Length: 165
Image (cartoon, rainbow, N blue to C red):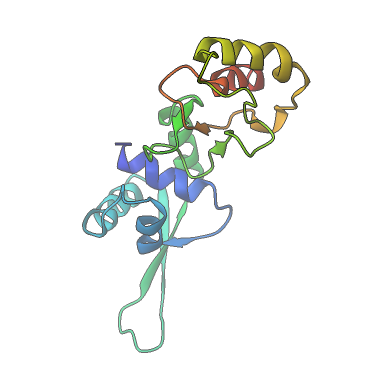
């Protein structure tokens, strides 16, 4: 499971300059964050200067609800701790919220399926030699990628290398 602090900061970082409620972070995490821990973690992050909050009063509610946003120090901390972009499996829930799916059905999907007489290595080799040279991957620079193969060898590994050359 991804470090909860990194998960929260990544979620806040993709929403510029917006603010989010703690419960929204829980819902967006896909089950990786719990309601019981998110506010403690947000409090710790705020104490460290990585996020700031402001209270918002709502009709019928006596205490303000807190909206959180990442600080410049939080962005710096995240860049140092989140690690370089990598390929994530779409079924494991480890991808940051701004990761890009590059499987079939996208412009970056591998049209050469594994199976039958085509091995994984052969499929990747054909993708690298026949498809990847003409593929524009510039918008994927610095992004985490998502496919169904990881952690097995995958065409997304080739895309990641080209995008970050």
